[in-house]
Amino acid sequence: MLDARADAYGHSLALVGPVARELGFTGVVVSDDADAARARALGFRDIVAGRSPVAESLTGPEVYGLAPGARPVLTLEGEIVAVKRVGAGAGVSYGYTHRTERPTTLALVGLGYADGVPRLASNRAEVLVAEGRRPLVGRIAMDQFVASCGDDTPVLGAHAVLFGDPAHGAPSALEWAAWTERDPLALTAGLGHRIRREAR
Image 1: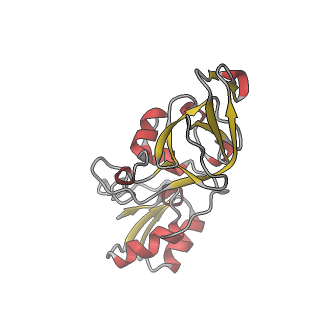
Image 2: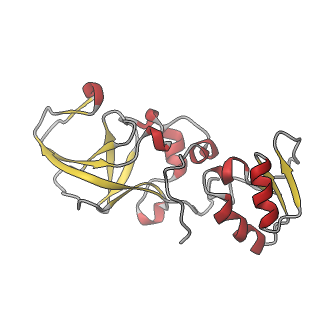
């Protein structure tokens, strides 16, 4: 039985459901009646909705690539909306909780805590920008965060990868879960509705 609560833990039942059906899943656990209706429309026969007791043998984290050794299936990207070169000692974001140690290029990324990027990642996490891992510096704001790119200058409009496939250089959702002190399923379930979901 597929655990698809919290809109498939942020992955979107509309995207995950058809793949699960192709793989032979007939049962699904969802959060509410609206998701139960969506699951019925996708062809699931055994549907458990709401707070009903569920079987112990749910398939969840491994389907979403959120278990150790599982292949990641989700990439979270944000657009680089501004690039700025600053000198040593520049304060970054609210409260200047980070000051640059040397001249550096900062990339402003258009995702923030309103999108489900946990504020606890401030000054802790890394993102993939311009083919390199970069530290997330300063406080995460409502709609944006800042990555320090050193002497590299990322392209305006390019994407910063918060988490994805480590085989391609991106931090994993498991790393982000550790940096933000939460379960990986809680991390992805917390992604906001402003984030566009698309299958690739």
